[in-house]
Image 1 (cartoon, rainbow, N blue to C red):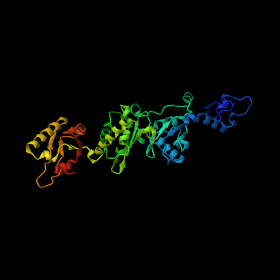
Image 2: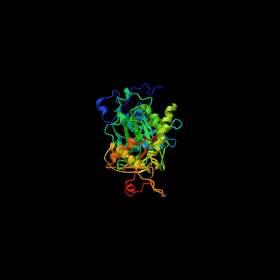
Image 3: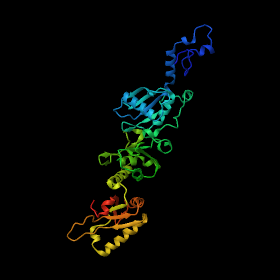
Length: 386
């Protein structure tokens, strides 16, 4: 089972360079040093360093094969500037276990394998994969063979990864959020996720050239106990022609389901609220539309109407400069548009955003208020029936 035979070859040494070593170490036999067999030395060196040149890649999709994995990792290594062994592909061999969805990817050099460690969480064919050291990795021996940590100057942004994110975006509770509409801003995605609690780390992955969202993000909650709640509540929500995929980033598609009934109940309640938020009304504007606040019957009497206007104005001004309050009233023998809605127009989007966060879900007259952003152009034209 020994990897090396009883020869005197030292692991990690390189083949002899003709004309160099004979002058330093003249052989008593007169046999030229360069005549020693070169290929076995190289082969033994490769075997001795293999544990430090291989990386484990877990969570592969079923469509992955040796060629696609090799091509992908060679390309991303080149893109981040991780190739240190000269021109050509960094990957020299790939072994895939299709049943368990993992691969061993062998690099040309120890340093390139260490650089590949920075690729943990990279998206391969639509899913984040784990990049780890193999089980036979020997840290103390590897330290004598080359760098054991990734180069800190790698251009990880070129492949959608965030440098230095380990402080807040690592560990088993990191969440992958895929299928996001491209028009969703960083603030809107964060707002969606923070409805379950404050975040310790967040990264909306963007295209390096355009700055536009790539449609997926990663996050970690400060309270790790809400991780499964958020995943259960958000996973599978449809947004236009897209469907959210939300799961622990290091567990592939095998997302464990929370077993506590209270957790699932809370998740179901959150789904109802989030579906409302994920409609076009989630795009921030200066105008807020409130529903389930008043009934048409309450708006008929002038005195009652004025009281409601004052209440809404007083409530709305708590969040910023309120420019206008519009509460459409029913008209005799005519279906007036927007009856039952309350519109709050603010001086800026920041105030409207604060108002939405403060009013959405609040109880008003026994009803739970639903607050969504409303298109400014429609509001300006008096179109209240959207």
